[in-house]
Length: 421
Image (cartoon, rainbow, N blue to C red; front, side, top):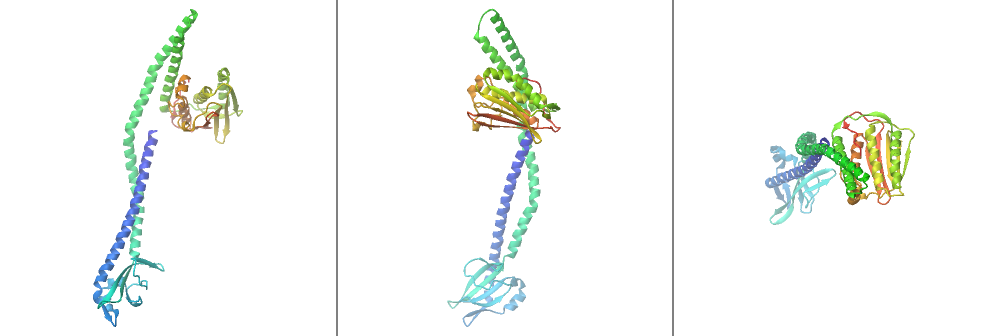
């Protein structure tokens, strides 16, 4: 249980780390993208401030002065697209890299025919009159390449980063789970020790009370207090035995596996319970395949069936009916106990297998229930590599389904002893 819990914490930490890493990658890519765009704009601004000396105005038209010589002396400038437009937006001259032959008065980035460039536009004034525009364009290819490299680097690093996170999270989860494991272990030991310590005095009280009751009966003395003591002692003994069994179920050892006839096993239990069901006025019927051979633990299966029948008997009113069936379903066998009892509210169905949980507190206490029967069923079924589920509607009854494999794979499971329920 704790190993599974530790893995869940580790997986949760890895999932959160992955999400944070993804968000940081996206935020980093956006920041990197904007930073490079700003750097391109800054290059264009500096270039525009330096190019003014190379522009003349002839006949109210701007023109580059001796630009070829400038490009030869500073070849790095040839990567920038330089364009001169007249006041009407007609292109006059063009130098540098291939750009978009169009004047863009507004906007800092434009795309045409698959080419995307950053744009800087400057008005050219001569004697207080607008004579044209200087437009600089610089391709964003290096920005796209740099951003792509950044994301690729983050992707390549991701497995190594997440692996490191995984190791750290598993180690930290182990440290976090260890105190809980120690506390639960101490609680389990306490339950087991308390069960063993209480088992003897509970048995003594029950035996002495029964003996005293018989003596008083022989003397013709009726005393309700003795009956109350006997019933309470029996209930206390049953709770103690259930606690001891749960303590044993938490200790994982080998199962006693053997091939058995499930139909015959259930039929014998049903025959034993017929009298109790008849006394309450509840019809108990059996519907099983003729022969079902299964490799399992007979004592474990007997406890499962007994607890489910006890539960059905307790919550089914007189004139009701309980049916227990067992049928092969592919590689599994299904044991179904269906009753016409009081049913279980929907909000309680997910919790009825929890230890000490009661749907109806007052009714369960008056009927002597400990709230452990179904939790024992769940623990045993899981130990047999099976599943147990319930479907129910208040006022219409409940249907408990136990699914077990025909062959139980070898492995560690719960140790089951012969405590009665």
